[in-house]
Length: 284
Image (cartoon, rainbow, N blue to C red):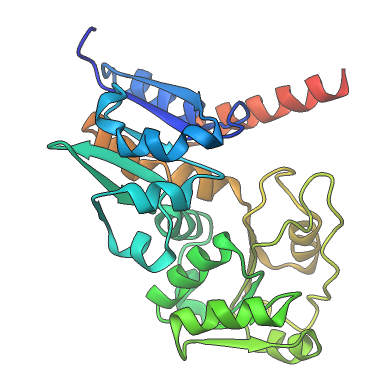
């Protein structure tokens, strides 16, 4: 249809983004007019593109690396989460104004609520490894559920910057403190690249953790990281990183296409099949 809404994922590079698989599945499932594509945007053109987004022909977009901060600076208005995190991953054009939001918090909490129901009632102490952009969203999400966050990062200075952003609810520690903190923790979150395909495994002893604790990893390639495998063998609840990717897509789809979608087992299977196909191509 000529006037059907068009959305896209914007990044550099962007060819491996699985957002089109998710949104196209929902468009088909709910029989909605519209399209969703990939848009590879050269760095030197990024700011001008977002400044003139109204002429792009798109109703909105997902924004991925390396443009989350650029898009943030070009928005006419941002939501509270985007303001706190200093980055947007979802934009929508409304009445000629570019509105930005950050759905990573929504995605992280949605994944945990789905994969480990009641996780935030087990206890109120969390460990977060890492202090990058993903860690910001995770810390903000955990604080919103009333948890105290114990932050560990290879560079203490960077962790301190993140902690200062959020206040007394976040405490920075040296790695020597990890075994002691693990004894009382209710959730353990890895936001680093350790365990990602091609990266070294995260070397951590989970044995001090209470048996009721939850371990989650924002990495989803591989789906079961060495950390999650270790936690599963320990008998702990685990939540993989794919759920965050799927759930963070919900608000944007609703904004652009007017229907609130659901994350289903079918959608998860479709994305997993695509991941397996990519792995086969890599081996060819």
